[in-house]
Structures are given as structure tokens and as C-alpha cells.
Image 1: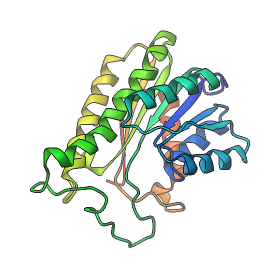
Image 2: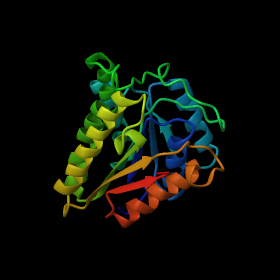
Image 3: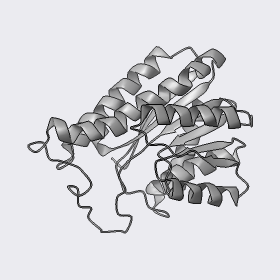
Image 4: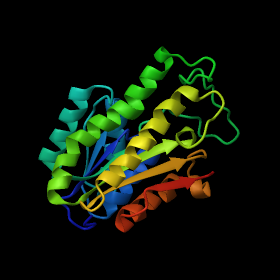
Length: 236
């Protein structure tokens, strides 16, 4: 991907104040306009305003990743206003406590153990983690393939790689996303489109070394510039 062309936009889907903002900032300071997409319009505007205060061209496009038409329309609007989307960073996820030592209530966040997992408990995880990724990729990939230039970046958690007690429903979705992304990486080899998967197995906390959002965002940026490595894990 051309890292200096201002006509190549970056879309961050699942853009929150942590890693999403950091990814947007890292690509923004490299000269790319940034489209921020998530369902919480108020929080999204706050992220966009904070980036704009740093001189980064960032715009908010509120959309729910489980709304196929809404997400597709948001990405189309972003491409029309900011330029062709050359990087899609997809990483919506539940919000975990950021304070050291604070244990999250997994059930309250919608996770289920293996014995408790049902079709009903998997469906919302699948719709958010897999369905939204399929929708977003379908919206931006044709232009990338035509230009023979682009990157699809999928950020996941531990359950994409190995089982975690109490989080089996997300594991079904994330391991499926990982498998599909791997296939996409192989299918697009030679077309100039990079597909990468970053699995994070530790809390994302500012100033925490490997788990620092800016450090993780820089890892993504470097992987895109390299354009070869499919999978990278952090904290395993």
C-alpha cells in the first residue's frame, strides 16, 4: 500500500477511544484520511474531534456492524468523501475493564461457557464478529482488487486462537473469522491486497508495553507496509 497518498483512505470499523483511535491516529499521521465507524454516534464524534485536534483528517460515520445495509452505506459514503478505502481495519469487540486487576463479568458481557453455549448465544457474536467483517470486506474489496492495492486487517482476541473458559460462543465466531481471513489471504495472494490477522491475548491498556494501544497500532502499520505476514499474536 502506498503509505503517503492522501487519496487512500483508512476505514476503522469498531472505532472506540482505545485501539480503534490508536489505529486511526497511526495511519492518519502517515497522511491518510480516516473514516471512523461504530454504532455509538456520540462517542464516535468524540474520537473524531480528538483526532481532528491533532491535525488528522477524520470523519465519523455511525453504523451498526450487524446492519448490512447501514454498514455498506457508511463505507460507501466514506469512500465518496475521503477517497478510495485502501485499508479496512475491522475490530469491534465488547468493552473490557481497563484497570489493572479488574476481572470482567463475562456473562454480563454476553459470553457463555461451552456447556452454556446455544445457537442463541452464538448468533449475536457471529453477527458482530463475522457477519460485519464479511459485509465490510464485500464493500471495499472490489475497488482494492481493481487497483491491485489495499489491506484488510482483522483484530481479534485470544479465543480466535485457543479456547478460553467462559468464552466459548465468541470462540466459535472468532476462530471462524480467523479461518476465513486465512483463506482470503491465500486467495488474494498475488493481487496486491494484503490480509492480516492480529490476535491480542492481553488487556489493552495505555503505557502497558505490548498492550499499549499505540504500540499495537504501530504493529499493524508495520505489518501493512511489509504486506506478507498473515498472523501475528501478542500476549500469548
